Each structure stands twice: as structure tokens, then as C-alpha cells.
Image 1 (cartoon, rainbow, N blue to C red):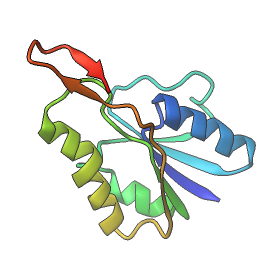
Image 2: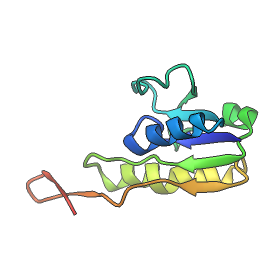
Image 3: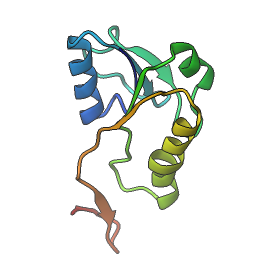
Image 4: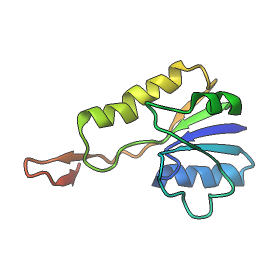
Length: 123
């Protein structure tokens, strides 16, 4: 199966990529420009560079994924607009693009919030 993976450099995304490759799937990862690639996946995953709000649409369409797995998320404290770009607007843009016939979300239940002092706390 041809899988497009968002968030392939994160903990969940890279683990998913490894599992999918072991099971014989073809994985293309959408990684942020300049972000380091996970060790061991540099050559086995096809890498696209971009963001969810500025995705490389031509390359995604050319890959023609059968499944899109959304694992992208901002794990450090960020503004609400940055979180929405990653999780909300970006996901919506990929959904509406018509490039994926099936979808799956892979995320953790962990989240962080910024206190009045600006430090992150898990909840």
C-alpha cells in the first residue's frame, strides 16, 4: 500500500513508518523543511519537504497515496494559530485536496499548555 505520512520525524510518526516498511508498504513522509530525518529511515522513506499549510501538492498527487496517516502535531508550547495550522487547517487542506482515498490519525493523548509563567505543563 502507498502511504503518505505527516509528522514522520516525530515519535509516533517515525515508529509508524518503521512498522509500515517492515510490513512491505511504500511510505512517503511529509517533513518540515530543514528538519532532521529519523535515523534508519533516510533511505527507506521517500521524503517530501513542506508544511501542512503549504504542502507540495504536485508531489503528493504524483505519489497517489492509498492511505494518508496524520501524525503531525506541535509538541512544544506554541501559539493557537500555529497549532491550528498544523492540526486543523493543514489536516483540512489535505482532506479536501482529494489526494487520499482513506485516512487514519495517529496521535498521543499527551498535550501541553502554557502557564502564566510561560512554562509547559503536561495534562
